[in-house]
Image (cartoon, rainbow, N blue to C red):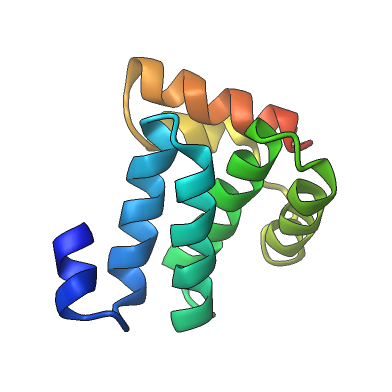
Length: 110
């Protein structure tokens, strides 16, 4: 993903995937940078709604609770009945699900 972004710095989806990867590796500050970049490059679409989810979780993991709350509000505006368990189950397995669920719960998702 890093290489893809070096080759095409305007690839919002690659920036999202890199942010997601950094999140799962526990590199939350780097996840924030990549996810913010993804949203700046590609502000709409389903993948970017997921970027807001991961960004909320990463902010929460970093103790940036106001930022996490802002991202949660964006997600809930478009997906008012979002359920963190349903999201986590659909993304990754085992420890990845637990890590995402923990971040989403810390960000205030139900």
